[in-house]
Length: 123
Figure 1 (cartoon, rainbow, N blue to C red):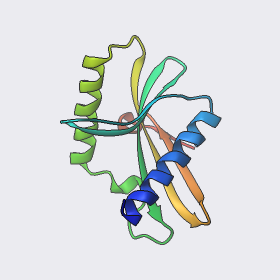
Figure 2: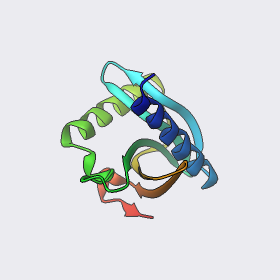
Figure 3: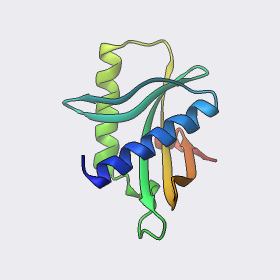
């Protein structure tokens, strides 16, 4: 596994732990189909949450949240639709983004945007 791939997996583990600490129940991680991949699928209250995790080093020119292109967003939406076809749910789908800025020593600055594709709220 490459160093960047290992760092990405560490970031995804951190994001999953962050979400669990806030009451999310992780349903699956790294859901892959032909349409694409979703990093984390979780349940929170009445929502089935599709979470994109983006990680950057401190001082990067582009923030983790700015790194999501329209093409990436479209792939996430197609992948979520494929998931829902295979795993129907009564929960309301929602798309969140967890942006991580690496601060060293396994520490991250976290920005979590709920409903990121529909206006979202930052915290």
